[in-house]
Length: 174
Ligand code: FEO
Image (cartoon, rainbow, N blue to C red; front, side):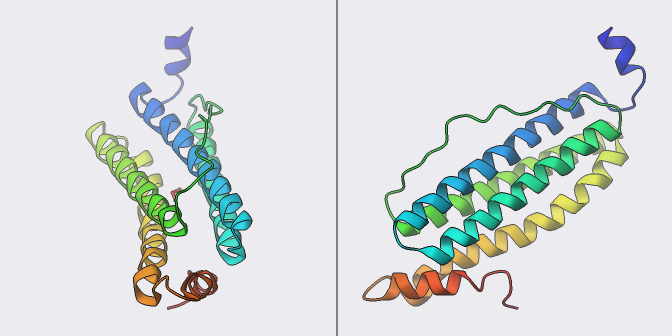
């Protein structure tokens, strides 16, 4: 049955698995950002909470984009299971450092699927993923900018308050 279904799509099973893994990774990123939003909110960093809520929405958008692509090309999109998410952070700064690390991992994962798509001569998937390649440039840049604010402004005195204020402008500053 499985082989019969596969005969109706040019999507190779290996690529389908990688794409479904990416769906899961984006879902996890969305959940992680929700936890970060909550941590920032309960520690008084309201702008950062709003920033992470927006990021969480974007990650869900990324997840759906890949999910829809798998369905469009005749694959089986799998609704992802999201493992337990870390709810506590040691410091304001560590939240943003974790976010940056998470974005770098996503970029590496997207790159691996692009490489594999090319190897399998799946140019449709390679082409589809170009949007994510570009999106990751922006996502990483924003995450890096946020971490930089901790050094540029400094955390002493009202520093963390100022950092939280500056976070609100990330993505809109050019
Ligand atoms: Fe969808 Fe921020 O990676």
